[in-house]
Length: 599
Ligand code: ADP
Ligand code: ASP
Ligand code: MG
Image (cartoon, rainbow, N blue to C red; front, side, top):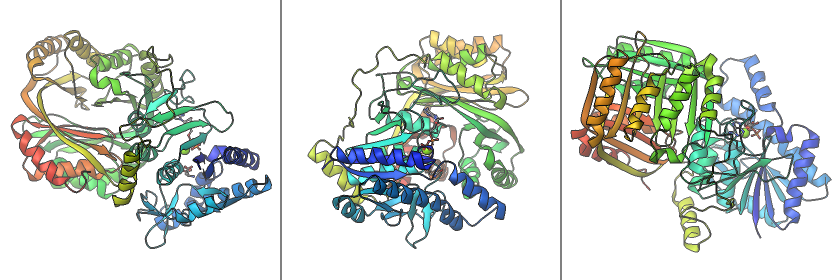
């Protein structure tokens, strides 16, 4: 019999009428001939209310007790939902995470799912019940209740769909699909019919709150097609599958993270191991570092800037103070009034001029870019918090995201289309094998470690920190027909920034001429370049949510005596640029460091 997993978010079960409406949807799916598992979140804002209660007692409650408390929100809603199904004349049984056999790691508040022992769940389904599953929670090996992190019910739903081999996973929420950006921030945002796992993963991790990013990792890893749709209407929403809305689309969506903080460590000795040392100290405080930008060093010292969510600035600064003292850096600065705007799209990996279009639009809107980082499929800029909403609107308009792409797919995919599509028996066996063999379902999996030594680096130093300069640099380079891969703009000293980029080696001379002319025009500082650099990439699933990946790379390279010149990260990849002569040694060091995680 076909099986459907449905998930209702907090606003979709905010009161008893809504719970009854959700119960009707579950019953209808069962009457259509499906077995049904319904995952529910806590009612309305009740998780926030529970957090407030805890705060009234202590600023720093034990993490174990926090999970004990927060898990009650979902326990209330599963019980009420099961009662609603009964009241409407059908059979249901509610289950907590522990009762469903969702076994997790012991990191309270951020637990990861290791396994799901689905036998009890299957038994209840076979007995004709709709199973009402508590989202967001599990149990560790010592029977402690754990939670998966805010928004984690999405992850419960997709993980259940994966282990049960569900035919569909429907995420019912208060918006009728995934939009090109948060429709609450920009009314002109457009609902997309279909989006790829990689793009959704990147958007979710860059701030699109509609899906918990780890749920998309599950979807991708286990080929679960995810349908995001409205609880309040029956119109089809958005399918999250292997293929995007249009082939080769440069940008499919934009995001804004309003509350970020920037930290710059000044004059960090530029020796192998210094970044590793800084970031391992921060990781020890359980803080996730976001944009990382390192200036190419001058006089044996480099400035390194990064961002964290604003709430974690205080904890981060403690780690930074220690690092500055220990490593003999010159000092540090920080700014807690910054926002990060990003654009995402799979097609930008193969097109020129995408960065230029984004920077030009921001310049024309008078918005200064403080920092830039890119990956194959995203460009992020850091701007003053007051200009955040304007930056989002500007880039959304620049890529005409409000309009459907000209070459959009006409047939919306409702099934996974990836190479491992579960449709074939071999592929199905492969998924089962992967589920059984992995130690933990959410463990880091590395697909590939690569060396690309076909590029050169160019750095313009002393770029005036004013709107429009990045735009002109990239416009001119795009006009020259040069494909730019990595772009990094550091946070400058004394109102001056450094702008580094990598280009194909045979385009360096041309790029240097262009850069030279522009540097003169804008009175920038000297230009430096490296005719041969090596880009080392580690790609897989869970690259950013497993904060240890970048640290493991830094450590491996430091131990091999290799200095990191540039860094960029995405959800599916971490890239570093090192000296061209050290490429092979770096590759070997990384292969050794990640040997246990390569699948
Ligand atoms: P639920 O309680 O159902 O899990 P959430 O509040 O977690 O719902 O997610 C839905 C909200 O996500 C929407 O109301 C919307 O404001 C926000 N959102 C952010 N980015 C996007 C986007 N790109 N597309 C759709 N909704 C988005
Ligand atoms: N109730 C939890 C939260 O508010 C989990 C969820 O809604 O997904 O974060
Ligand atoms: Mg949610």
